[in-house]
Image (tube, rainbow, N blue to C red):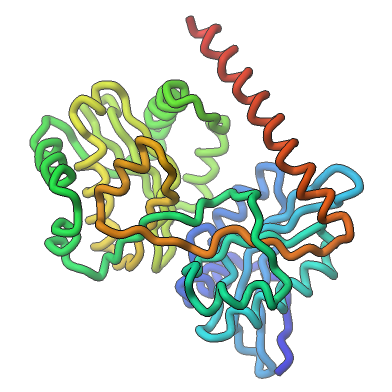
Length: 342
């Protein structure tokens, strides 16, 4: 059966396709639009069968690279398709991307289980594991089709205690308006400075809020008019995905992040979302906090590359060096900003 791949320029049709295949929020139009406004190009591909029926879709992000590499093509948490045709759709998308954009590689981080049949078929499809990870494969995904009592029972005892404790504090837990986003970003900057990680300029986060709209709810714990903790999600019709979060010292003291996250989970459950993805687990304090929300972990397929250029081996060596240099520059910039604030 022949598959036809075409670019989509209709945001409504695109989001309907993504949600129709139970796709991930990083495949939604608004996420791609934000990346396009911040140094990426986007090609949204619909895959049709012989009868003209859409059987798959992939939002491909393209990043220009220095000569001679041309570009890198990247599909975050995609593609999505009718069940059973995932690898066939991926093959059609890969062929299209190779011919249309000539990237050094197509990098994918699909929303597939690592131990499933689909991921097992990636090597035969020409893909190889990559260490150049953007989205961490090891994560925690809650099944929101379960009852609240079942979700609570699956948590650690400490989590349940802190949800109750922080819920009794004189804090207001609710959705954030656009005018209140700067308060959340101020907390995020404090969190980033304490933890030593880099963040974007404010405009990037405002673009996410504007471009995704109802698909990117932000929740906060307020002490009076002050934000003491916030949690920023993106959500498709099937999956909610944590993007950002942070706390002030007061919020940490009050354990505000516990009741806040539970409030967000309850809201997503009420909205009809089935999967709640905590967006990665590492061996750090934040991940320890995440692990208290369930007794299990999930392992997604991880990062896979399909080489599309003879220069791919050189690229795989050069990219980690470039990333390391960028991290050092960001670290120096962060230290300089901290000194200026003092």
